[in-house]
Length: 453
Ligand code: NAD
Image (cartoon, rainbow, N blue to C red; front, top):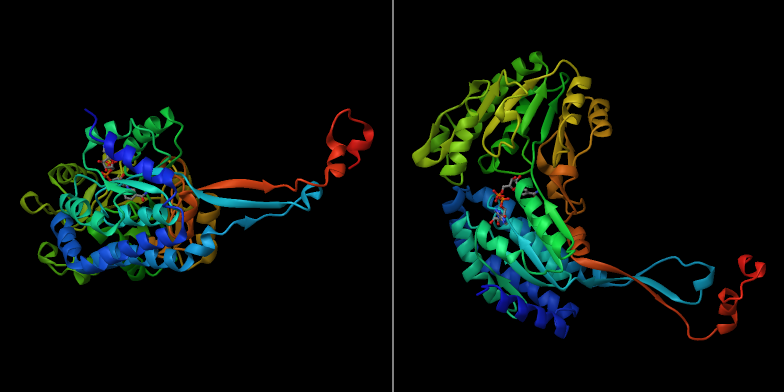
């Protein structure tokens, strides 16, 4: 017995009726999504607090308000985005109509991770609905409380003939992926990304893969250490470090490290007090498995700041590691926790070589008072996104595409990029049935005269 067959058949039949295509239907779904957020704000805040001990401020800015912002943007621009895009023509088609039509793919699957369990399900969903698709949403089974709200409450706000939430972990998702979808949008680890892509290949289904990796953070000698410490610490320890775009490690000279360490200590105390475990502003590790993995990483290099942990509370202190070797585990895997290693380099060239020896990251950060230094890091490396002199502020702009490159993923979304991702760009040329005399030129028997046209 296949648990997904009936649901998928129902959604596909609904798509084939064409009911998701009109702008009014799409707008109604987006408005429903907005009402879901507004009506259930407290429920969502509570679920995020239960899953990740997310401070209310972090839930608001990085989950609820971000999703609402995407909904509002899509509602304001929906009709303009849906419009046929006229394109330039050649001599032979001057009297015809040439355009790109954005049409929905059909039945799309969105698979989400647990670290921003609302944002990373709803923001892709906005794009999929705006583009007129039917959607199957597979939230993470690990962020259980948000999963429950998404499964039990969200469908009430959407047309259930066109939308479904399905539940499950690796095994169930594996079975789900055996089915044919018209598009798959996956956010998660590179390891599972490969599984998703292999499953999609069986049906030649196009994919967006939003993956993770290690995001380097270069800190130049010419910088104000306190400013750098504030900005790096905010984005490293936000959501207890469980952020795909968090600065994963610092590259700097030993001299800059000496200036940064007291600045980082002072920032951490300012943000979370003398006892960060009792701070309401620091999240917790999602579960025991992740906690134990992170505890293993605390043994790398030497703890310069923090290092404490408490398994009963899934707490890991905001930590800075020094004397870290490139070969150690903490420099081999994505950290995804509140641990910040510092790796020493002797020059900008050495930092750039270090970055280029590794997989292309999802985000790359460079701090310097010199705009030439920032530009050099930007020009000589590659990454999904880049921010000079701050952490992941580039994500706050819906005018910028969000996505990885190489091992950090493929495809992009946010704002209009989401709409475009979930739309097939259909190349259309509508020719005149008349003017056959002119068309005569292209028919055999060919003569040199034809080529002159
Ligand atoms: P994950 O890859 O373990 O799981 C993601 C989703 O895939 C979940 O819904 C899960 O149920 C499903 N899944 C897990 N194993 C599967 C399998 N064998 N077959 C089919 N489906 C399976 O990722 P995670 O632990 O939930 O999230 C952390 C990872 O996600 C990190 O690597 C992080 O960098 C990445 N991430 C990336 C972004 C981004 O936007 N690029 C955002 C957040 C997280």
